[in-house]
Image 1 (cartoon, rainbow, N blue to C red):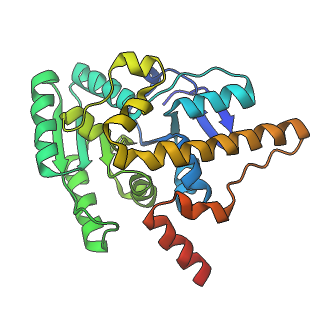
Image 2: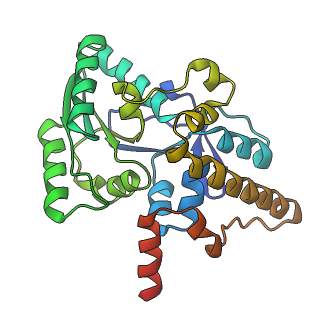
Length: 274
C-alpha cells in the first residue's frame, strides 16, 4: 500500500488521508479509534497494543477529530467503520474481488449476503458466525482461521465488537490469508439493516452519537455519557500537559471500573494477581 498521511495523538498514528486511498493488495490491519476505545485502551495493554500496531487507524468519532484539532491544530475528517466498508465494497465490485464476514449471527450474515448479491453482484462473499461468547477456545480459533483461509478473501471484515475484535485480529493476523483485515463492529448490523444507522444529516452535524444514544439508550449510555466525559477530561489533561511542556496522557487506574467492560475487569484482576 502506498504511503498514507497520518497525524499523531498520544502515541497513536491516526489516518489523515482520504479513505479512497486504502487498498487490499497486501496484508493490512485496519482498526478504528474513538473516545470509547481510547479510554478502554488506557487500561487494557493488549487492546492498546492492537491499536498501536494497526497498519491503518481510522479517526472514528468527532471526539478524536476534535482532539487532533485541539492538540495538534490540524483538521482531519472523521472516518467510520461504515465508510471503509463502503469504500472496499465499491472497489471490490469494480474489480471483481472477494470479501469475508467473520462475526454476527447467521441471520445477520444471511441478510448481508443477500444485500451484496443485489447491490454488489461482482463480489464473491464468504461468511462465518463464530460462537457468541467472551473468549474462544483454541479449537474455535482454529476453525475461524480455517474458514477465512479456505476462502482467501481480498478483504476480511471482522465484527465482534471492541475490544474483542481488535485483540482477536492482533493475535491471529499472521495466520490469516487475507488482504485488508478490518475491525468494523456494528457495521455488520448497519449494513444488514438489523440496526439503523443515523442518516447523513446527523452524521454531517457530528451528532450521530446522539441519535444512537436516543435509539439505544441501554446499550449506548455508558459509551457516550461515561466514556465521553472521561475522554473530555483526558483531552483537557493532554492540553494542560502540552502547555506546561510535559505531555503524558494517562487515564487513572482507579477510574477504570466505572466504564470498562467485564472482560477488562477480568484482565485487570488477572494482572494484579500475577
